Each structure stands twice: as structure tokens, then as C-alpha cells.
Image (cartoon, rainbow, N blue to C red):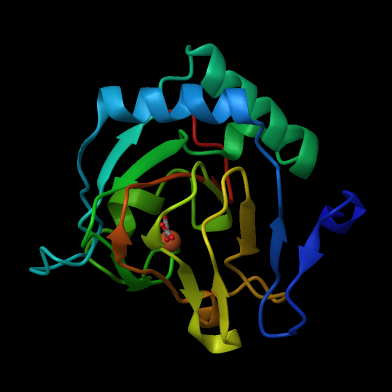
Length: 201
Ligand SMILES: O=C(O)CCC(=O)C(=O)O
Ligand SMILES: [Fe+2]
């Protein structure tokens, strides 16, 4: 269904359902969203990160759904993917400064991991990830999917999205991805994660 959108491109592999769409978010909206991330940023926290303080070194914030720019992005996503917004986690903004990264990880939660009960008991596992680059980064900051040898360069307004599950609905380890270090400039991204069941709590 995503391929029905003009400009949507699928990475040619049967290991993962992985897509990109350029110019998904228009310039005016990108600027508003960057402003909100700058206002609300705080150091990222992570489920199951253990002791590795260097795993995800960016700054993160949940975006306020009452902000018009946030609602506009929610509407764009719903127009594109038709996924019931009740299954969506709050949009999350991230800001990476020079040297910051998000080391290789999968977005789904580890079954049996310490946080499984806390994070998945109500809304279930993560299903799809929709990630948007809000700006051009002067150096570094690409997102690398090792299993399929695909590296996405940050381009302002570009969407990258993937299914965290396989056709049999089990978690897909081929979704492992690395938000690589920013070498120059600042990188802003927004991530939307969807769950198996309604989130609403
Ligand atoms: O910033 C990136 O390139 C990756 C972000 C990411 O993996 C995430 O937010 O889950
Ligand atoms: Fe991720």
C-alpha cells in the first residue's frame, strides 16, 4: 500500500520491507518542528541500554500533540500509511550534535528483556517505524542498515520507513540500523513508532 504513493521507493530485498520517500515533509513544517525540538530537548534515555552511556548520545523529546506543527505531521503520516493513530506512540524528536550517534539497534523490544513487561504489556510490540530527516547535515549522520547494505543520507524532508516484523509477524533482526555519528553540523530527526495495540495511556 505504501508503494501507491508517488515517489515511494522500496529497497529491493526480501529480507526487510524498507522504503524511502523524498520531500515528504515541506520546508515550512520542518522549520516549525526543529524549533519545537530545540525548545524541549533533553538527554536521550533508552530501554535496555544497560551501562552503555554512549549507546544513544543524542537528545530527545516527545513532541506535544497540541502543537499545530505536530498535528500537521500526524496528518501527513495518516494520509500516507492509514495506520490507526491510536496505535502510534507520541512523535519523538531527536537532535544529534557533532560526535553524537545512535549505535546499531532494532526498534522492537526484546522479549524477556528487563523492560518487556513495562513497555509492552499494554500496547504490545512495535510494528512499523517512520523516521523523517528534518535538515541537511553538513557531515555524517547517515542511517545504515547493515543486513541489506543500505545507507540513507539525511536529506531535509525525507522519510525512511520500515516494518519491524517479518511476514510471519515475528521480529525481524534484519531491521538492525545505526544512526551514525554526526561529523559536522547538527542533525534533527523525528521518529514515529507504531504498536500492535492501541497506545492511549
Ligand atoms: O537518527 C537515525 O539515523 C536513526 C534514529 C533511530 O534509529 C531511531 O530513532 O530509532
Ligand atoms: Fe531506531
